[in-house]
Image 1: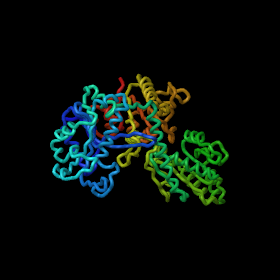
Image 2: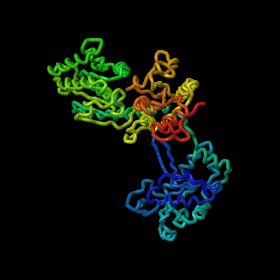
Image 3: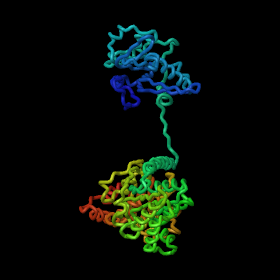
Image 4: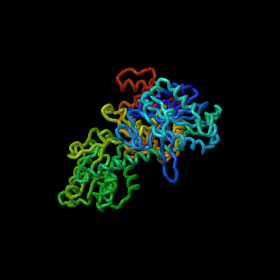
Length: 565
């Protein structure tokens, strides 16, 4: 049996019968190698030239045969080859194409370090009409470029080797007879016809590539602002990773570019610091709600009652000093801070009452990410204009699956599509080996070219298992803080520490927040043993655990389990 390259070919063109020919050529002797859909590309005089040969048959003892196959209706009129539908063949016809590819292949080998073998390999070409019988071919008056003796008909489908061997028996003008060794035969295949190579991207390449893709996706996502241009009030919902914060920033920047003042509110003080540092603009005030209330009232401790009165005055007298209000992480202004929710409603009323007819109030939120509140505030539920973001612009798909794995709504929430990425890993270790494993995890990430690493605790900074080794919010060279403080922020790699039983049973939302901060890699660390894993699974599922509770817990989290002894 001949060696077929590729062994599993690309899809065949419908009606070409190349699939039938491919199967027929499999029956050639094992001294043959058959190349399907062989493409040649070269540049001459600044012109890019491409050509394709349907089949190349290389026999060590006989030579190289370039074969074109033409099934179905074919016609030749006025010196031109045409398909049955009357379309002109751009290649000049099958015979000219087969001959041209033969000479190109000879030139390719001749210009290589194996060029001397062109004087010891016979090169031939032929045309196969699998739809025509030999009798019908014999009745056809071939054009001068063709010769019946290099034409195969449908009889070759049942006895391909006899017919092809007949072509190989033809002599060539130079009198060349194929005479190469097994080593030379395989060298031609390995170095010219089917070379092998591996490309190993340097560490960090995968990270850079994912950044580029995520950036493009975010650019596409921000295009929604174009559709909301005429909408003065809107509520935009999106799961973690959909780019809410960056879209919100984009809206603020656009308004500032038009010379309009923007109040940008966020719940998280760390996020506020990040935005103020990286998007500094005299027309944009990045503030927490507490910070805004203190500034509004001229006090050091927030006074919500006083702030409400001032905002009502702004609305009544059209004197609100901002043209636009943008709220990020709006779900955090909820029931546990009723005054916050009411204040946001007053801000909405005040800015829309302003003389600027283009003034607006946009709120971005995540209904799944209500860490600070038990329910969505009313002003979010009742908004007239609502929009949901579906594209993941931050996380890989596998990180997204892990982040949402503990949510009750998981079965009803579509995983945000994006880059697949590496499956997150949960590391099982003892408290005694915790630091060693943590250092190994960090080292592995850096070897993979990832240096933007943050360690997030699912507890508090003070109660974390690694707190004694943290100095000024840094472990080693990695940032360290709680998941809550890191809300709205992100990093290439997140290492979640202090994963305990209560996370699965009582604090799934916190896990969602922390895990969803990771862009490219997510590593989880736990000191849970088999017994605690078993108890956790039984509580979470309400049924007995299996024989391998660590593996089963990892499966629940859509993770790979790695046990460190």
